[in-house]
Image 1 (cartoon, rainbow, N blue to C red):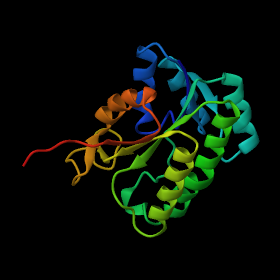
Image 2 (spheres, helix red, strand yellow):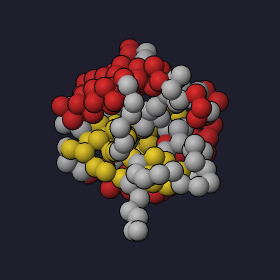
Image 3 (cartoon, helix red, strand yellow):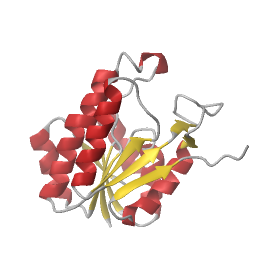
Image 4 (cartoon, rainbow, N blue to C red):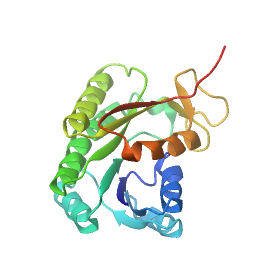
Length: 195
């Protein structure tokens, strides 16, 4: 399968790209950071440097790759977790405008989208942005993957897991593979804990 993965150099993308390549998929890994193209090439993906907010360029790169599927792993979160609330406007824009652009680009190619979401309630406008994001994907016949809070390398919780719902980032990527053939709807990917 030809998979266009937006957010390929993000926390989940860094785990997901090598898994997709190992499964035999042809992967175009989109990042907005030119310096991450070499890593994508090294792990077997075709690097695509593009900003999801540049609608014309996005349509062009998705069309040129001619994917069978578009995977949306884009977020706009700060490296410092203490800055998440201050940075909320940028991430909400990603969920609204970024998602709309990516879904429209996929539909222009006649393919569907699998998009990451969250399995917990976000405060304030974050919840409204998630609702818009999910509705946009589902109305286009796509799949929503609701992850628990991520923990492990490169996450806000590198050591101790956060409160539930949560999931190790490597498990989140591995379990996302099952969503590639899922019917339209929402999938919950969280760690199952017994008390």
